[in-house]
Amino acid sequence: ERQLEEVIASLEAMASRDAIRGGRAWIECNSAMAQQIAGNIMARLVGLQSCAHRLHVLYLVHDVLQTDAARKDGSRPLIRAFKPYLPWMLRPAYQLAYKANPNGDELGRVLRLLQLWVERDILDAKEAEDMKALVTLADLPGAAPSHGASPTSRPGSPLAAQGMAPGMQAAHLRPQVVPMGHPGASPYVRH
Image (tube, rainbow, N blue to C red; front, side):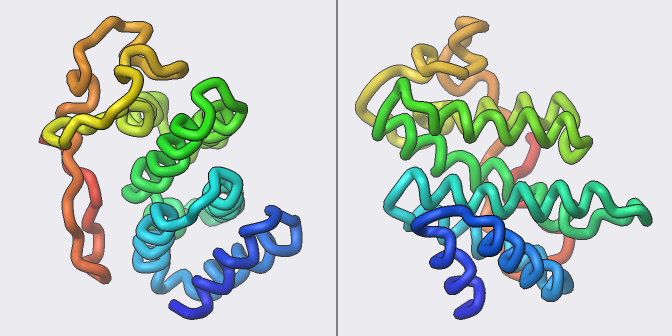
């Protein structure tokens, strides 16, 4: 945990190539614990105070995923470990960016990662669409409403384009508490 904390702290000021390469190398060396690492990254992202720091950590995750996608053996263990946590990593970054500046570049950068993950065959289009719905919703179904703009007015929200009622697009996805180390467990479940 201390080592992961150091990796995340190294990305606070900037997402340098060396910091990202070092973080990826550490994650790859500890790939047997990749699911726990992904869960810890997810949990720590919420506590990061700046949009930039959250984005820098997401860039590390992106580097891990795209490197794993390029593997010749096709096993993709890191993608399998990280994939269930991705919406819950992207969501706090998007939500803080929206709160800080609803028209800012950070919103597009978070959503661009989804697009890149589809292009690199890390996610399929449906997974990316579901994740985008979760990430861009102001309030998750069953959650207390937040103050501010309605989710249908958020830029990039699939709800805005579809004119859907808040919560309808992602209502089939519910957060789930997953014991750390439970193999194959997913922090979101389809109902």
